[in-house]
Image (cartoon, rainbow, N blue to C red):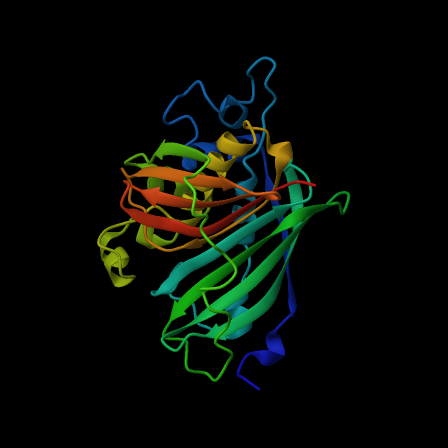
Length: 289
């Protein structure tokens, strides 16, 4: 029995989290909506365009997942806003229906696993989202966070990264190119993701980056926009699930190409920065059933 086995599948109630139209609009701009063409994606960046009701980018659900306090459950001490050496490894979002433009959600987080990677620990947690007033299930987020220096505790190593995803041998069916603004991290962080390695050079270097990065969940939001544009014609009602693994950092000013291969269930994808490095790998998308 490893150090954290008794905590696996424990549920933490995180209380309620509210958002409004303005917060959803700010998130959209924070993940680059309207940057390449301010007249596109108006369903995400405006609330008053005639004939185009406001929609919420599905990856906005990841902001709700940030409310979890899983570090306290594991007994890890916080240092400032987030501990040095805490890096986002993987992320998924599954929605049962489109997110409403405003509302209050009841959030509960389940610790799914703590993998021992030797040099660190990979913590996998799921946050379930329900509407507070109706108890309607909206969906869930699942994240994998790599914590440097927390390994070698005798736990399971976890599945190998070499299984479960194969890049098709054919050329991509779709490629969506999106620019990252030079001030992207400054805008994105206003949605609530305040990790200092997105803004502070010293902290970024301490976490192993050459300079401040675009937050991992910010990169994830760019990928969500690309999938909506490339597969869903911008319609969030068609979104069911997306998942991906962060492999390299994205920096403000990068150009992001999302290459997409269609499958029977949806698609698999990768995101490539400046045509040279894969930054989001092993991507999977599924349409809503």
